[in-house]
Image 1: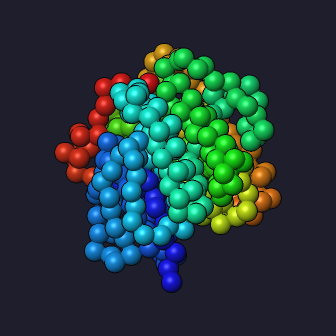
Image 2: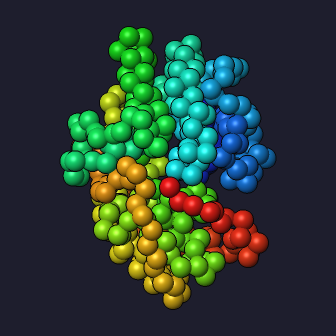
Length: 324
């Protein structure tokens, strides 16, 4: 009999790729999303399948899923600065009330639950690269706190359910991820650069461009999540690509990839924006036998090939007025 899994945030970038993976693995998948930032176009190819069902629901409200559940993946949350600064209360609620509801559902169904956390729990780090043992440097009342602290609370309540109720829990700390189905207007650097390049706009860097990021292709991330879910490890694990690059270098890579000749323009760095970001993936290597396989060059080509087929009208729709 097929295992059954609930995936929240199913119509989002990561959620939709996870739906694909678990269906390919032979699971019955229940996708759940309130579509506040998700897009049904990401999962429309799954609707004809008997192995997939969709529920339009906000997990911040009581969750009722009929029938058995073996696993739960909680990926419902705004994840970009433009989104969570536009809907701060909903962001806090999905990280707190939503996580509480899903942990309660896991308790009721005796399901194993994996919670999607983020490298943002490390804030603007003073330790580099960031290991799971690092507690972070987070401003609890700054503009990014609605996301950062929602995720930190999410980890805390998950561990409380694990220790007090004996729930089987897994926590993945996700570092910058990219690939097809990203939203080009979500304000993060990689989709912003690709969108600007495709529209023929100058590339916008916030700060002096010396800050660093490390980008992981979505297929690698999904593999890491799958292995973590199936592992026996209950504590947070970093999943990301440690191939670190400055934003200036990355902008040059995008210009080279797209064959465009835009200038790079600079604006002030937003408050509390991390200066460095690079995962220590020692735990993932040891516990999950996982490390990323897809190079940034290969992954960016796949991603660019996906977006360059967008029409001019679609690209215009991906514009945004400000990056935070």
